[in-house]
Image 1 (tube, rainbow, N blue to C red):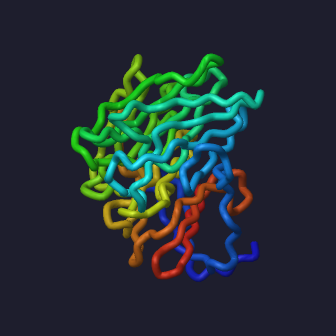
Image 2: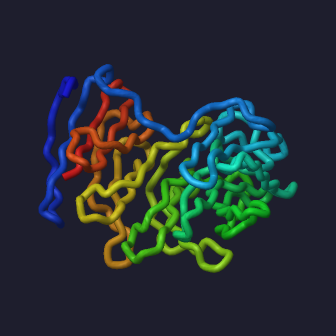
Length: 298
């Protein structure tokens, strides 16, 4: 394998009878994680632009028109985006602009096909100057980019949310969107689904964080099938980052399947990939003391 395994621990799933391995790996032996987001020089972009690369009709997407009209600076500076731009596979470019009451308090657009029509939607964090953050979904049409659905804003200025991921978490055939609301002050894992032009809140669970104040890193949570039942689960650090909570929707409610505890806090992104070559998605992440952790699915 080319890795030095420092310690190995087998954890059992008491509810399912399956098991997964938790092991600490020498950091230098790990390859860099794959990422579909790249820094690039594009027009009207933010100073630290991150371009999302698409695999379908939308070829690229990025945030545009830097603005300082929102003074939160939760992502490390006071520059946010007033709009988003996409490039289609025909080279046509389309732009969506927000009104003056809000900004995109985000680093990159997320491309995901939410309505199963074969075309990706755009998912972004929209922050209102007076009412804080909401999750926004934009629909791309040949004539332009239009709002599709949006959650209610948190309700106070300088209150933010950080997306976790999108999947069919309850196995009902419809994709849900997961976020951590207020990850710095008692974060809640929150799930939404599209209902008309709204993102309807369907589940909420306290005790999570997937972002540190001032950090540019948004990927400290993940979605992956952790127990091998064929349904995507949520993997999100607990408040304080010393625990990794593994969450699933069970009988219509969020349930903690297991909790991986560390003496040193989680300090990196959660990288989802096949680490052992068995075809299943595993997890890899780093701790503040320099150790690297691999969580291998059953």
